[in-house]
Image 1 (tube, rainbow, N blue to C red):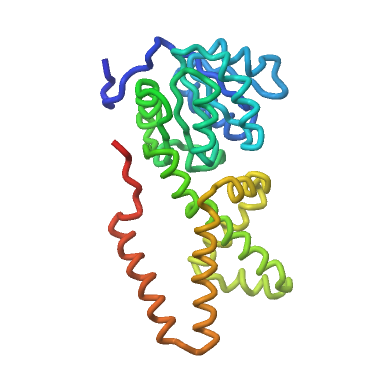
Image 2: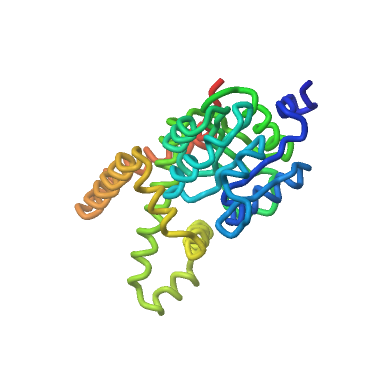
Amino acid sequence: MTDPSGFPPPPVAAPVIGIVGGLGRMGRWFEAFLRGEGYEVLVADLATSLSPEDLAARCDVVILAVPMEAFGEVAARVGPRMREAAFLTDLCSLKAPQVAVMLEAARCEVAGTHPLFGPGETEAAGLRVALCPGRGEVWIRWWEGVFRRRGVQTVVLSAERHDRAMAWVQALNHFILVALGQAAAETTAAELCDIAALATPSFQRQVEILARLAQQDPALYAAIQGGNPHAAAVLDRFCGKAERLRALLAAGDMEGFGRCFRAAQALGARLAKGCGRIPGEG
């Protein structure tokens, strides 16, 4: 029987959910989120007495909230201990490699999960999560319902499509931020003060995003850049366009710059009409 939201109940009554890496910031976010939904949640981490293997054997749902560099080793330990009727998912920023690893490690249903937000968010409503099917259809429908009932928007798409989009959403976005930070870091303290004092609202938003980098893990950002096979082509395209714009300005070709600007305007108009939303795969 489905609930009023249209999503099915879990395949087993009162599923026990386990989070490997549950003492990390995102692991803690999901623990609180799922406990708030009334689920029993177990946590395994480096500092817990409960091992990932024992957690996997006891749980109906296992979430791998571990760094990408440790993902393969952890999945290989957890997967074989899971029941065939269970559900395995992860929280990594890339999906195709992780889904493939989980499919190899476990016989149960598998899906990739990518929270499109950071662990500092306090309200679930309005956030977005990407879900990438791997094996099976029953558990992922329940999992999507868990989010949707709390007002979280879900985007269901293949792991390959997800990673292609993340080459823009994450790899290029982070690349631009780091380049901006490096350029600004070479200014004097007085110049930085002037920049801050004269920042327009749009530039101020960029500065605020840049400031949040101070709280981020450089290893994660490096893994997102180096681990996404689609990132290099996107960065090459961006750098080529940037070099072209710089050449136009250096040559005083304002007409050429205007053509480039109008092309960007046309894209902005498309996005304003909703073309920026990635449709789910049926």
